[in-house]
Length: 277
Ligand SMILES: O=C(O)c1cc(=O)[nH]c(=O)n1[C@@H]1O[C@H](COP(=O)(O)O)[C@@H](O)[C@H]1O
Image 1: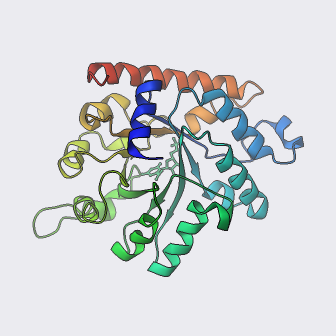
Image 2: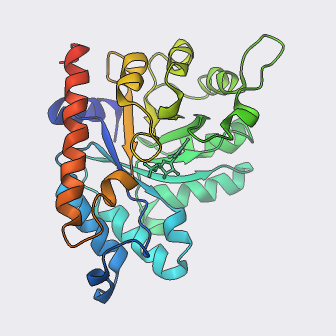
Image 3: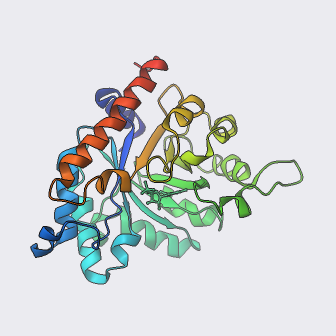
């Protein structure tokens, strides 16, 4: 999916919600366990219930890889069920020497090789340019590079300053912006980072930011929008557990829709404040 299509979708749906499919087989309603692929059935019902309210789905591959072959089958089936008008994110946090990154890129971007055709993949920047560039060789695909993450340990490395008083996350953004433009490169910035969005926007005025941490991790959508929105919206705000486990019962899809709609309404208010349309 290209940038213009993404922006059009945000305008049409008045939403920049990304639903996170962090589907844990031990947390899904029992009645689904009779199905041949319970995780896919769960995801399918979540997608059916939310696709008009969100512009993206993020599949965290850990929840699938941890289940071996069965998990991989659920991953492939779910990736192919994501509607075309929604940006599909493989949240795999990859990155390695060039020829290995090329294989990771094929795994998520080349349907003939792997059966999967994601629009984007999350990548760790630690190994530098040659570990990221193989992902950028695929047309109309996005790299979503970790910049300032939502977890407590993010300060261990990401806030370390260099001789120019610049934090590591700032150096990551400044350098990575020389590898690709804002049509191909997004950054992960945790919702728990509030005012840091001011600094991020100084270095990345045009890039879309994937923002996890609203919902279960307590980040504020309003703060994220105050400091993070740009003229193209420029945000994809993810919520996983708060949506998909809004209910543990047979009504899980209905409750997931209610939570997604609550967030979509809040996003619409923020877009209106920003005179986005
Ligand atoms: O790259 C990510 O998606 C990510 C980066 C980050 O800084 N923090 C973070 O929580 N995530 C992911 O975003 C999702 C957040 O899930 P919830 O806390 O359940 O909404 C999980 O899939 C995390 O792995």
